[in-house]
Structure formats: structure tokens, C-alpha cells
Length: 409
Ligand code: PLP
Image 1 (cartoon, rainbow, N blue to C red):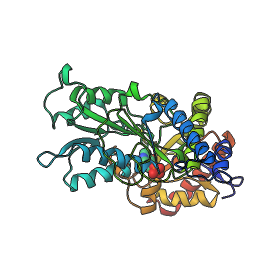
Image 2: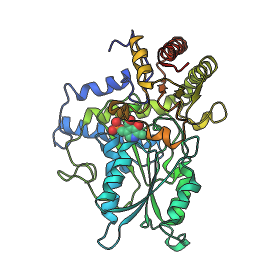
Image 3: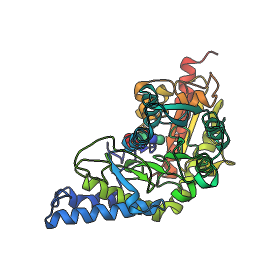
Image 4: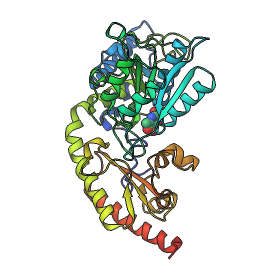
């Protein structure tokens, strides 16, 4: 893709590789191709580079380096967290309790379905409120349907009653959940807490102790890093078993020769995110607010799905804009924008590919006449105000054209 000709507004699907990340990775894709498990000089350089990246990733979320497990992607991290703890806690006479919600990414949603089907877990799912938040109150109610009483102080540290898995931020509607509030519920009832932070990691401040999470999943390609590398933050002492076996890399939890270049790139992306986050957020908020207000003001019968602006601006991912247009097919809109060299999506990249209706929009109660008209525009530090204006004009033209072609009146 010639990025000079294109406007790229699909940063929730993936981001461009940052040039500094590419520079950090290049030596490990060219002259130093050593296996980090080797005993010669270049291998020890590769091992040191992995250790540095582990420390960079840990620093971004207030963790210790030995609590970071590198995996191949966010999906694998979610699977390891959920399968690994369910298998570690399951016994023949007792399934492990699990509480999650109805708007998780398929990497969590489908994994929990599979664990339930295989008989490993007893699953309760909570619904979001109309803005797309999973509230601590709703999670507590679901936990209480599984265990009736809170843990007393003496056993408060033991987290063997079950697992809660609630995403840090939603990929389709940008809602940022109160994970710290859910963390209090997890601690009170002796549940482990996992959060899928693939969308928020590197974009909003996350601290594993403040949130009280035991596990957190992230993926490099959502923050200017390469594809094919993810991580699982795993709190020390968490009871878990590996889901794949082999040479015992990554503390025995993720066997397989390390993707040194990918890990180094992820580390550099974390370092850059830590330095740039507040300035980038201010800049991206400016673009986002202009884009949202122009679209809502200039295109009738349009809603912003998820948290509303300006009131809930901080509870929405910085560059995330998602709309629903009455009487328009989102997929036609995306094609119309593509013809005008603008990359956008109807929602999640994976459900768009399968052309399935959005589970998330249904769950937050988007009206039937708006339901098929979803459009997600997700911005990054690489975008400009001129691109915002060109895109709004293009969306306006496409929506008008589609309504003229297919409208009832
Ligand atoms: N979880 C969420 C919330 C996501 O948005 C995504 C990707 O879009 C994933 C998990 C999967 O991450 P990966 O593409 O690294 O497997």
C-alpha cells in the first residue's frame, strides 16, 4: 500500500510499523540471526536484547520483567491465560468458575465457549450497559451467582474460586472499562482477573497493581510494533499450566524458539509509547473530537456508538470513532471510502471479513434501522487534521449517495 496516497483510519485493526521500531529490529533480521538459546557471543547478544525488551514492556504497565511472557500474538496470550488457568484449576468433580461478558473479542469469547464445551469451566456472561461498559456491579452479580460469599481476610490472597475475564477496552466501540473496580470484586471473592488489553496497551495508562489484574494480554501490532508478537503479563505466583510443550522457553510457559526481532520491536514500541503517550493523546483527541463533531453535525440520522463525547471522552480510546448511519449498509460505505483511498472498517476486522452482524452493537441496543450502518474510523499519531476533513467530506458524500440509491423515501 502506497501510504502517501492513502488515508489510513483503521488503526484499531493494525498500525504502521514505527520507523524507530524497524531500526531496532533490523540487526536481528540481518547480521545477528542467532538463536537466543545458543552459547556463543551473538546468541548472548540476542538474549540480552530479549531481556531488555522484557524490561521495556514491564515498565509500561508497572510489572516486573519476569512477569512478561512473550507469545505470538494477542490471541495466543488470551488463550494461554484462559486455557492455562482453567486447566490448572480444573478437577474431575469441579469445573472452574468463569465470569466474562458478551462483547469480548473472539480471542476471549470463543476460547471461553470452547472451554465450556469441553467441560472445564462453568461460565456466566454479563451484558454491557448502553454505552458499552462492563460495570463492576454487573460482574459482582455474576460472581455471586457462582459463589455466595466473599472471602474473609485470611483467605483473601487465595484466588482459586474462579476467573474473571473482562477486556480493558472494546475494539468496536472504544469503551474503556473500570478494571480497577472489577479488580476489587475479584479480590473480594477470590477470583483471578484477566484483562484483554490489546486495544488499550500503549494508548492509555495501565498499571497492573492499580487494576489488580493477575493476567493481561497485549499485541505489538496495535502500537507501532510488528505483527506476530504478543505478550501475557502473568503475576508472580499465579497458578497456570502451559498450553504447548517443547523446549521450555518463556519460563516454560511458551515453548518455541524466540522471535528475537519481533520481541525487540515490541520492546521498542513499548518504550516509545511510554515517552509519547500524553502528547499523542492530546493530539489525537483533537483530531477525534473534530471528526466526531463534524460527522454528527453534518450527517443527519447518525449516532456515535459507545461512550459519548464530550462527557465520556476519557472513557473512550483516544483515536476511536464508531458511528451508525440510518438506512445505510456499513460494508457499502467502506467500499465507497476505499474507492476514495480511505481505509476504514465497519467494526472489528475479523467479523467484517466474515460479514457477520455485530454482536457488540446488538448488545448495546443500537436501533434496528441503524444496525447495519456501522463505520469505525480509528486514528493515530500519523494522521492529520486535513485527513480528518477529507474523510468527513468523503463519508458525507458516500452516505448521501447510498441513501439516494437505497432509501425508502
Ligand atoms: N483482543 C482484542 C480486543 C483485539 O482487538 C484483537 C485484535 O484486533 C485481539 C485480541 C487479537 O490480537 P492479535 O491480532 O494480536 O491476535
